[in-house]
Image 1 (cartoon, helix red, strand yellow):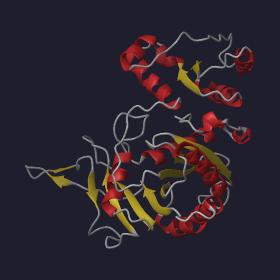
Image 2 (tube, helix red, strand yellow):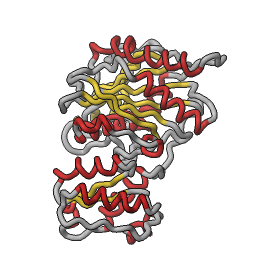
Image 3 (cartoon, one colour):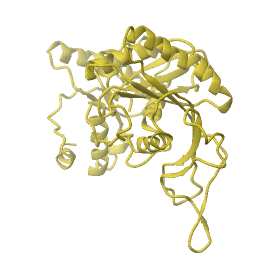
Length: 359
């Protein structure tokens, strides 16, 4: 790891080692962690070597319970030794969790510097449904405040608790900027076409309530853009090459006319986007439906922002199918689904809640 750190410019100091006789000894791990904390040697991050992925949940609970960011690595990845490529990828992930930006995105001038990007997604695979919520808080829009909301199994729409999450995110944003956001751009993943009105009625209403309670007598109230993201669609697109053969469109292919639902409005419109380049099989487009927009930001700017954000996810080298806020929200929901029902009791420190700890 130290050898790989020289290549990518990250300093890796000699660690404090915790050795366990059994691979599942979470009690022993916590006891030794607490001893380090008592000696004022609290780790910046705990790197946990897992002999079996079944132990993941237990060690994550130990680290979160002591407000320590962690990176779990399966021991099987070291079976033939840790090569520089794998070590470099792990270090990049650790760097992101600790607040380091791997790269920066240049945003359009039309976007206010006080723009907050928000991602919301829901995971249903456990005994309860978990909502992942994240909101950008720094000027580069690369670091996020995050939290999870637990609701009854199968419930997709977030009909409560969202307002309080937004207010906490606004507080973090204000601390870093000295002001509140002037534009909310919300990427809402995981809802079908028939639930768009419910999102506006239930979830956007909570945004408005948070604004009323937070902005008080501010002369200028923020504007809102709500974008519904849908990956589960049947549409497929092709282009014809020089030989008359049908091939996948290139990365960045955009379809926003003729076959879309609404193309003549700046306040409600939709488009299909292909962020990734695929050489094998049929590339799958993503559908974006701007269900509400009371900002002056033009359609082309929102389309380009959406495409750019598909390249702004620090845990993957290249483009992903959805914008980074969507993927971060999904990772949050997925993490707490894997941690199980005990995750309800976890309370995060400010440092953890304002980091990409969930990667």
